Image 1 (cartoon, rainbow, N blue to C red):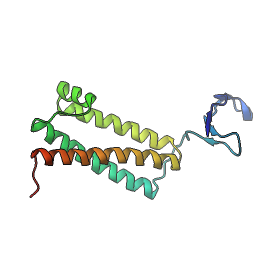
Image 2 (cartoon, helix red, strand yellow):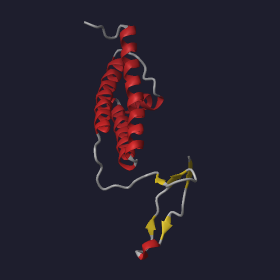
Image 3 (tube, one colour):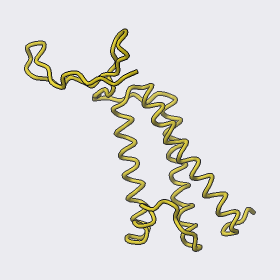
Image 4 (tube, rainbow, N blue to C red):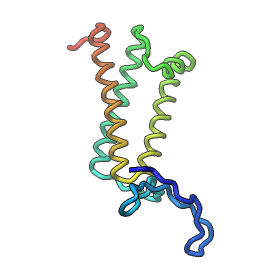
Length: 146
């Protein structure tokens, strides 16, 4: 499917100039908007499950990162490392807050199908990082299982 940008402004419907959405088109069949501006966003079951997974994994990632840096391990993400060095834990919270703002924005603008894919990709990355951090802390002996 090729992305085609139609005229961004249209004066159709004699209601004055209105924004015209970017559309996805393969040249055949109906065109689907790439972004859908909404006033209300309905939470589907899959979205609720993915949001819960993302929030739990994000909290775990924050706790594991704080534990790892407290025992002398180095943060692997360069941006987070710089912000942790400059602002302490507030730098980590800043990065996580920015990621959540980006995530909410994408979820709000994308269609249900694309929002599900977007959340699933974010959840996959966040859970993977959390599993890696847990394995690293266990392997280094920084934390031990009871």
